[in-house]
Length: 408
Ligand code: TRP
Ligand code: SF4
Image (cartoon, rainbow, N blue to C red; front, side, top):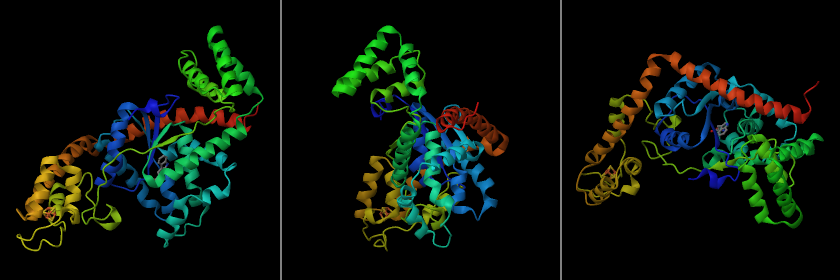
């Protein structure tokens, strides 16, 4: 996965959030967290607790939020998310998210929100809740604010969240369209061009002209490279010049892209989607004895009544675990032995119990200092809040100026 090839601007900022649902399970770990851990090596990552998002659907349950937030952050750290490498923060600690959400709402057509698939889906799925609320309708826009606030290029999400990133792109475009045409804009661009120095400035102007007047794409590419190579232009000036190349106004808020990362699909103990509400989950910091017992009693292919009855791995939830945890050799052993009834299901589960417990022992070890001293977790978050807030303040300065709410 090469970030540069995906984003011509070379923006390596990643943003992702998770609702504080409490203790995380192996589904979260294999589906999301392992990607977060991997990405922190290559990108500048911002990971946050989406507590306001949780309120859009769970506003009737305020007592649990505090515990859920800290349990989840400890799970992140336990999974290997490294606060030296990534910025971890809590959404509501950066109230600028609310301000940006509000300002974006001014130019967001109602229809765009009503059309987001999760709007109707969730209302139907969570029938027992009243989700005909303003907050629930607006939550994808809150997500847009989360993303645009950090001018993120990449948003690692699952399939179900792709429409939200798509909405974010449309919102960014609309916002830039309305507010990116200040009278000072041409002046700002001229200043940025001058800043490149005489020779580069001249080249930039010629290349821009070749693209805007003759549609010369080669010239566009050359001009992009030229802008990126400028040492003395900061990111926002570069972004401005890149947008200007194509005849756009100021790129106040750059458009993000969804990053569909490859991740293992981890099913639950019963073969359904792993979920707390289905009571089929193994938690990241689960008790080893409970884990072992849970796997021992996992249902298997119902055809295997007796030891001598052959089975079919594809009909067995245990096999789904092997797909995530076992080596090629072990998987071959399982497939062969299951179909030939060479061993019983308990035998088949043994290597799995070993692998899950081994994985969890490393996780539990990383969690230990934080469990012992909760102040450490709060420090991690306080530090992340500060870093996030500094970024957010920078964005909001641009945004406030653009929408005209800065008075001298
Ligand atoms: N909406 C996401 C979810 O329900 C969480 C989320 C909120 C998010 N803001 C985000 C994810 C920004 C990625 C980027 O899972
Ligand atoms: Fe499932 Fe393994 Fe039993 Fe086959 S042998 S049914 S894969 S547990």
